Amino acid sequence: MATISSATHDANGVPLTRGHKKVIFASSLGTVFEWYDFYLYGSLAAIIAAQFFSGVNETTGFIFALLAFAAGFAVRPFGAVVFGRIGDMIGRKYTFLVTIVIMGISTFLVGILPSYGSIGIAAPIILIVLRLLQGLALGGEYGGAATYVAEHAPHGKRGLYTSFIQTTATIGLLLSLVVILVVRESIGVEAFNAWGWRIPFLLSIVLLGISVWIRLQLSESPLFQQMKDEGKLSKAPISESFFSKNGRIVLLALLGATAGQAVVWYAGQFYAMYFLTQSLKVDSTTTWMLIGGALVLGTPFFVFFGWLSDKIGRKPIVMAGCLVAALTYFPLFQGLTHYANPAIGEASRAAPVVVVADPETCSFQFDPVGKKKFTSSCDIATAALAKAGVPYTVRKADPGTVASVMVGETAVQSYEGTGLDAATATASGAEFGTAMKAALTSAGYPEKADPARINKPMVLAILTLLVIYVTMVYGPIAAWLVELFPTRIRYTSMSLPYHIGNGWFGGFLPTISFALVAATGNIYYGLWYPIVIALMTFVVGTLFLRETKDVDIHH
Image 1 (cartoon, rainbow, N blue to C red):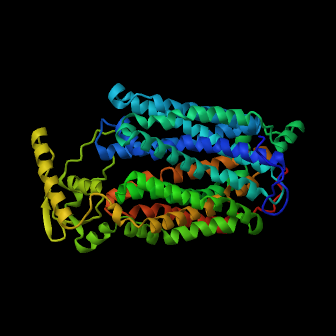
Image 2: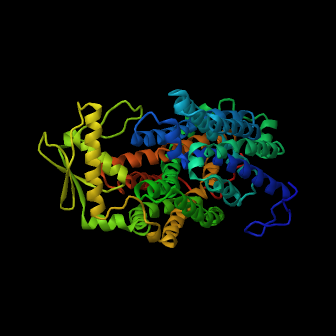
Image 3: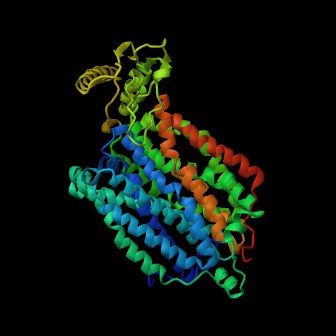
């Protein structure tokens, strides 16, 4: 820790001691590496779908891959309970040492896991098990790091101090994107897709060693140590946290703070990335560079809003972030379409696409086990359009009508695939695909975003604004959660609402939103999910949660 100067000051002119800086640096750096491990999967979801879910069709494979991503989020609340209990009974330091070891080893094992082609169905099963272990570890990591830093912070500085922990998720995502880009550019796209994608996962073993070494040098939280010395530790932190009057605060913290914070966070970072690559067909390298640029520009605002929350409060900043995000998501994502792939909007206005079909034959095309066949004429037509990233609407036709696709004034007849033998189905599919592609091309619908027409400064500006929304809701949230709960059950109490909010409400956002888009044909329809949740949080948080910036946490 020799690089840490004791001469620097915090934003209010009060000296930051060498010990304070060591706590912030060590806690933050370890958490950065843990988020790096966790987000590698999300950044490489499309490649992982090809490697581990190649036994199912492409669309189902991508959704299956997103579900495996979400599986890591699904178990985060359970990790919060398990490790929160340990943290409140044994100590903050040793608990998040255990979590980072679990995370690092699980990530490394993804890097050496054989593909579906080598070991069949065992590959995706093992992959999801490793994702579950990662989720359990992350469930214990964040609460430990945030609690540890907050309990070292002087009164009136908790927002500032914990804001550095809040930067770690974004920095971890940025680090994962940088490593992926460097490796990909070094060995080439073909080699990266074949085997080079494993390198970023394998590097996690090095990051694990660094993280463990740094954290072994830390001492226990002073507040926890004091309670331990006084014999005041909770003997049943789970019961005290959730089955007492404290349980009401946990529920309000979930609905009135972390649920909205989570969807704004994931909409601004991950959903924006998926939207660019999947809906707007922007190439992945350009997307990663633009997202990375927005993260670099936006990350300092985590610290700014953490500092500001020490002045004006946590609640008004988080509530404002939820409200402004909900009110502006539609125009901002429409702006992304206009500046990243304007040909989609131009073609949609000039030649709108309509699927004319019997609604009873149009399925919700989601099959995580890859066993169901979507062979109705409507499903065949909508699947082709969704895969092409083409917005469409569905017009009701008489029962029994074979679906057709109207591209402007051009009609393309679909076909009924049910009962066809393989050869006939392949021939019919090829004929339909050729006719559809010709109609879409003639109407100006692009197969991919034209690099020459991507207005990168404007796309970067919109992405940066989305990240700033993230910093508004996320910068002050750790301090707010820490201050809502007493020391003896703080780790457990704050971890559960945080990880239900971020693990469930946030983690499932990409899967839910893309399923909504596929069901409606409206590329913006998935935004309703984060908008509704953010507005719910704004109402509940405004009416029922208290401001805490002046609370004394030394009890």
